[in-house]
Amino acid sequence: MSALDAALERAAVADLSAWPRLLATGPAFLGLLHRLSTGDVEGLRPGEGRPTVVTTPKGRILARLIVLHLGGEGVLALGGPGTGDRVRAHLTKYALGEDIGLTDAPPAPAYAIVGPRWREVARVLGAPDLAPYATALTTGTPPVRVARTNGFDGDGLLVLGEAPLDAPRLSPQDLEVWRVLTRRRLAGRELTEDYNPLEAGLADSVSFTKGCYVGQEVVARLNTYDKVARGVVALEMEGAAPLPGARLAHGEREIGTVTSAVVDPRTGAIAALGYVKRRDLPSGVETIDVVSDSGRAPARIVTR
Image (cartoon, rainbow, N blue to C red):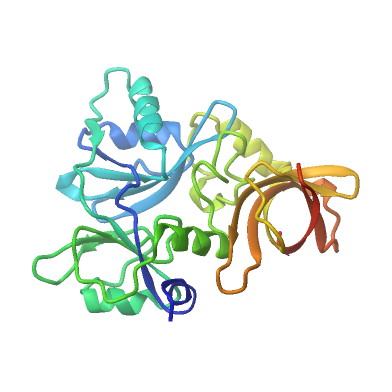
């Protein structure tokens, strides 16, 4: 069984060591992040974790963070690829002298256990049964820090440090194929300042009962009045994989944009993710076109 097959059917390991991790040791950090992002993070206690989205004043996505309270070690914020410098600069700008103690976390391995049977690998590792995004130490010797997340959502385990992991290892290419096939959003692709958290399907990272935060009025209004104009769709097609930015069309009307596309090595088919304007994609439509410099190609809608 290939590593990709294992990730889709059993369990596999992805190396996320290059993903940015910020460590905050100052007492004001959670309060600041609470005011600058969508999640209710101010009251996090040691061992708890939560996803949140740092938003612009227009309610757009600056970065999605997975926030882990490590107790006396500080608060760890895991961001998507390429977001570290931007998030650190943004939070520092708004700190206004508050003691947030924000730095890059010391370089260390980080591995995500993914796949429908990730719990079996976690159990062998000595990881406790955790609530989504919670964090703890394993029972092994030496103990290793783990958190209930795969880096994208709460369905997996993040291992922060070296540990014996009895599962196939995904290459970066395998990880990208798995991500697109399982419809997980990534920084720089689906998660950019072009979109807001509700369009991106990140409602689990948004609190609609917390106090004000930067961009809150926009996000709350979209939710209250059901004005979320766009959403992510998963597509399948044949031929060459379109580049991110390729247009999506229904008839003569341009309705969206491709954000990610990969070749499934098992079948040769193309799997893609993209945003579409909801009002321009009538219920019952099963096929749309991908439009690029080389022409138009039909794509079947897998999910919307």
